[in-house]
Amino acid sequence: MTIKEAQNTVDNWIKTIGIRYYNELTNTAVLMEEVGEMSRLMARIYGEQSFKKKEDELTANDDLAGEMADVLFVLICLANQTGIDLTEALEKSLDKKTKRDKDRHANNKKLK
Image (cartoon, rainbow, N blue to C red):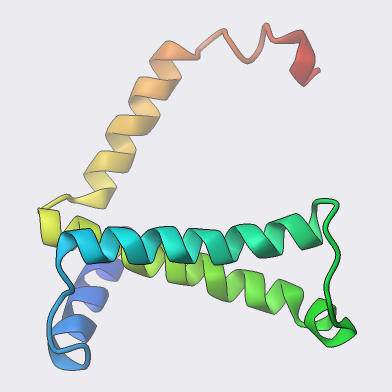
């Protein structure tokens, strides 16, 4: 699925199953909530925090994938609501980063 297809799919889902978009401020709050849920798992899978129950640890990677998908879904909702073409925005961002960081990372001794 391309980014454009994802934007169209989410838009169709919202309009048929979700009834309508939440307003932009609500969706921003929902995005922060979803990022927090993803962060919680990252801290336990890759960081120093531990899981409270062994069962949670067993499903952590599947749960992490789901949380990342939730973050992406809400981000796509916000892009759709604000008229942003995420494909175009990502291409511009990569172009900017490529020009700005052309030599920066290659010369960063911390990355070697």
